Structure formats: C-alpha cells, structure tokens
Amino acid sequence: MTTTSLVVRDGLDFGEGPRWRGGLLWFSDFYRHAVYTFDPETGDETKVVDVPGQPSGLGWLPDGRMLVVSMTDHRVLRLEPDGSLVEHADISQHCGFHANDMVVDDQGRAYVGNFGYDLHADMDERDVETILADEQAGLTNLVRVDPDGTVSVAAPDVRFPNGMVLLDGGRTLVLAETLRLQLTAFTVQPDGSLTNRRVWASTAPQMVAPDGIAADPDGGIWVAAALGAAVVRYAEGGEVTGTVQTTQNAFACAVGGPDGRTLYAMTAPGSEPVHVDGRSVGKIEAATL
Image (cartoon, rainbow, N blue to C red; front, side, top):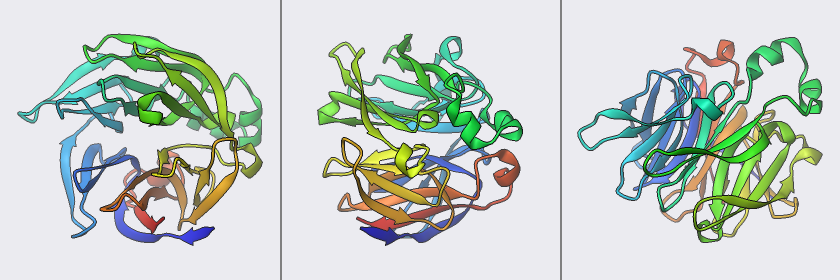
C-alpha cells in the first residue's frame, strides 16, 4: 500500500530525531541548533532548548529528564528541571566524526550512533555507489551510555549506525546501518549488552539507505529512505509492506498521534549543509497509517 504525506509544518532547516511524547512531536533541527516541539492540533512550534553543538537524537531518562545528542562535540547532554543543559556523557573516545541518532531504554541506557567518518566530504569526492561498495566507509562503533554516564562500546564494526528502535518490550534493538543498507537486530541482555547480531531486514533491493526509523504498533519498522522521497515499511525478513511518498527526501520518522497511527517524516532536499543550512527548506510531513 502506498500513501502520500501532507506537509504539516515547513520552515525547518534540517529536522532530525523526531519522537512522539506527551501529545507533542519533539524534534531536533541541526542548523537552527535547537530542540523543538510541534503541536499537531494547533500547528505551533515551540523551542525547548538551544544546543550549540548541533542536536540530533533525543530520549528520556526514567525520571523524565531529556537526553539529546550534541553532534559536533560528541556528547550526550541532559536537560535538568531548572532548564540547564549539562553533560551526561562524553562519547568522543568511541565516536568517529559526528554523533547522531540515539534510543534510550526504560532503564535509562542510551545507545548512540555516529557517522564513522566525514560522509559529506566523501560525497564531494565519490559517488554514492562507490561509497556503499567500500566496506570501510563509515565503519565505527555503536556506543552505550549507562544512566550514570559510563560509556562503553555496545557493538563494534557497524557502518554509519543511525536510527534505532526497541522491540519486544526492550529485548530487541534494531539499528539502521545506513551505509550497509541494512536493519541489524541485537538481543538486549539484562545488563544492557548486545548479543546475537543478525540481519532484521536488507534494504538494498530498494536502494533505501536507512536513516531514521520508527516501529509501529503492528511490529513493522518504517524507514526514512534518505536517498529518496519516501518512508518505507519493512517486516522482519525484508518484505516491503507499505510506502509513504513524501515531497522531498525523508531523513527521519516517528510514529505517534493520538491513536498511535500517524507517521511523521522529517524531510529536506538533501543532507549536505550547503543544501539546507540556513535555508528554511526542511518540512514535517504526516500520513495516517
């Protein structure tokens, strides 16, 4: 089934890390350097906090404090009740180039991805097909940050670890490996370690470079295509079971809304700063599932 999205908000630079929480869509905007909420009932956008180091992935600790990835300085920051933004963890030791997306489990453990290398500089030198064929491009670690700020490697040798979701009540973590064109699953052990690495779905047949991802109530995973104007739904094993066409390339997504069946997509003409930084061309698009 193919659906077409509607633009519900424009004027973003580059939206990322959307999360549905408390009746609002929370998201980061890379080049406005802040975290925002969007209220679908009113259409209002509200700034939550400025993040000078370029915000990306979002999540919440069990006590309700928000975590946000600060990309360019390789940190996870924590928003305190008094509005101050403090360092939760420095992940630079295990981080290749910019940090990016994140998922936080119900124990407060954060799993954080990173580019692995300077993708945009590489894209100036090589075409996409050559980059994808280079198994060393974007090879890096998925990082785990425990609630007390302790940092460790959750999984080595992943290629451009990006969006993540937790399934099965938090017992399975699925990771988008953007440059491997693959959704990779791990079993989450009680101590937060990841085992039993396996392919959850290959996105290569559709040439979908999985960026942000989101799980729906029926166990499917929606994948922002990054290289195309679509969000594609995969079942475990790789079957494509739905598509939402967007007005421009889709880089992140969330499932939410009052009934939990609205897909929100963060879209932009491209991901390179020259195309989006300060240009107000990013959009939030929505479709009913």
